Each structure stands twice: as C-alpha cells, then as structure tokens.
Image (cartoon, rainbow, N blue to C red; front, side):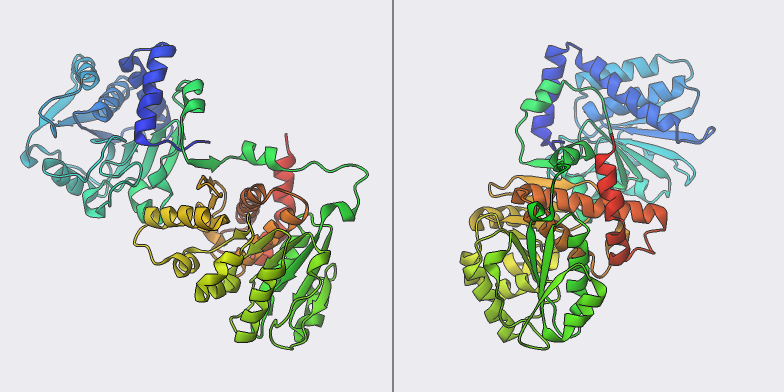
Length: 504
C-alpha cells in the first residue's frame, strides 16, 4: 500500500475527476458519504454533533458531512470558520446545499465570540484544515483549535487533524493542532500518522476507501509504503512436498554474555520456529548446557571463554548469520565482532550490542556487507547516526544511513520501518504495545535470521520478518492480553502467524 504526499494525493484526485469521470463536488460528496457511514455506526443516537468547517476543500468535506448527518436525523450545529478571505468553490457549493435544508443550524465564525459552546458529551467533526496544510496554524483558527481541545468532547477529524503536517514537512506544535479521538483518512494512510509524537494528535485512525482511480494510485511516485497482509502473503515461500532440512538453510546465531544469556536463547527459539533447517548457536561456554536444555533442537558451538564471546569459527558452513543478542560490549567481544564482520560472506542480521559496538567504532561501517540487515530501536539508531528530535528527522537519517552504507535498516517502533539500499521505506502494519517487552527484539532477530538462511532476499526477509513478528504478537494479545505478552509467548504464537499468512 502506497503512502503518498499531499501533492501526489492532489494529482490522484485530479486524475480521478478527469478519467472516471466525476465532478470534484461529487467526489467530495462520495468522501463525505463514506465518513458518514462510519459515523452512523458509532455516534450514539441523540448525541449533539458540532461540525467545524474551514473555508477550503476540507471544510467542504465537513459541510457535506453535516448535511448528510442532518438528513439522517441527527442534531447538527455547523460553524464555518473563515480563516481565508475567500471560500473555495466546492466549499461554497457544500454550504449552499447545507443551508437549503429546513431548520438547519448554520453559523459563520469571524471571531472568538462566535465559537460554539461545546459540552463533553458532544461529538465534534473537525474539518478546519486538511492534507494541503504547509505551515503551522495561526490567528483565529488556533483559538478555535485550543478551545475545541479543552472541551473534552469526542473529536473526529476528516482526513487529517487540523494543524498536522501530512508529510512531516514542518514541526507541529501540539498546542496548535487538533487532538483527534479518531481520524478518518481517505484512501491511503498519511506519513505523519506513523510517528510517535503525533499519536495524541491523530488518535485512532481509519483508512476509508473513496474509490480514487486505481491507475492514478499505481502510477503515483513515492518512497513510502505500508506492508499489508496481502502483500506479505506474496512474500512467503511455498514448501515442496519432498523438501528436506538441508534446503531450508543452516543459520548461525552469535550472542550471549554473563547475565544476558536469555537473549540468545529467545532469538534461537524464534529462529527455529520460523522455518530454518539447521541452527548452530555460538555463545559463551558457561551457557552451553543452558541452551541444550532450553532449545534442544539447536547445535552449540561453545566459545573458549565462559562469560563472553571472544572468537567465532565455522563461518564457511552457514547460510546466514545473526549477531548481537545479549552479546555485551567487552573489548574481547568487540575484537570478535570486528573479525566476524571482516570474514563473513553470507547474509547477516545485526542487532543490539553488535550495533552498539559499531556505534563505538564508526569505521566498522565499511566492513558491513551489501544488504546486511541492521535492526536498531530508536536509541540504538541515535547512537549510530546522531540524536533526532522528531520521528521524521530520524527516518530521514535512517534512509540516508541505508543508502550510504548499502544496508537494509529495520528501524523498530510501533510502525517499524524497513528501508532498502535506495531509501525506499516500508512501514509495518502489524504489532501492538504489548510487544514493548524484554526480548521482543531478540525474537525478531531470530525470525529474520531464519528467513535469510532459507534463501529469502534480505529486503524481503526483513519485511516479512517484521510482519510475522507483529502478527504473532497480535494473535497472542488477542488470545490473552497485551499486558500478558512476553517474548516467549510471542514466539509460541509464530505458528499461528504463519498459519494466518497461508489462509485463503
């Protein structure tokens, strides 16, 4: 699924209007109709609805929504806030059709004294500004936004919360942006919805299909995508009836140190539950019997040191390598990591302390093989590339880091971003807050390692691995709860995640 810029969305709208064909006002009515259908299933009957409309096309959407809700029998009060000297043509048409209704409550707002009285039980439809906003709000509209946010009412934003930058092109002051309870966005998600700092502004967002022309969407250029279930299904390999374990790869997992052996155990379990044929685990000697007991299916290549990894052998025997889980950053371990990066020729997934060591030794970036997969969470990535004050800044740095180092970056988060060598970004659509728990990242490393060993292209392994990881967490949370989730539970539900991908 594509994520388009505001400018690209305008072009898709224009193409739809020309080639469907449909008038721009009829397209506006179609969009409002879909929004009203959503609202009719959720707004309690008898609730008072207050519609706040701006003077642009987003305001037109809101005015059509007001008319349709009024025709459906709701008590609707509409306020057209004049933040521009002129009203757009389609907004004027929507106003005309609304005020033509009998007994309609319609008001023009030119100053703060004209604002409606809002109760906490009201439902607010926010149509002040839409996706075309290219600078922070100012003037009367800021007063309206702040007054609305303080009301405690349920706020439903049409397409984009007023004041939010669609593309992350300017820094948003939360005090000058609508804090939506729900956002009903049209056709495709917006990039700004996917950053943590915008969660309180966007609320729960829903994509509503308004049947924009598929050819226009297909031809639209973008660097941003969201991996859907159907797209993930197409990434999954089919297995031959006569397949044997040798055809599913031999993975090497390197990790563990005193006090952090559990990380490599979790990663190893996840790897074995993700379809790998063979797994060898290189870890400190003192943990050999721990691993045998916890993961009997894995083979062990014990390090010569009891408490840390100091030297890794057998690299020529494996299909893919995973390194970093619970590894520690001891000087001896650092030397082992440098040596492994220098000698390894097979695909790699690099996580946790291996990334921290690269951050401590920036020249090691030159040792990374093309298409190596790095899987940092935001703090780990900031160590690699410098701190960032907001999500868009960090994402831009991650794209550049992937391009400069010819690596695949998995920037972990609520919508983990998988970035390829040319800076194309695929956001993940699965997962939940219950997965914010110790060991969850180790499980992801194991999943991606298993896919790499089976012969998946690294970019596909990263995208599919992140999707399966989140899907397993979703199934587990639905079965128990988000609070109950542990990394071990998530791994136990990998089978259910794979099964869901194979269902017709």
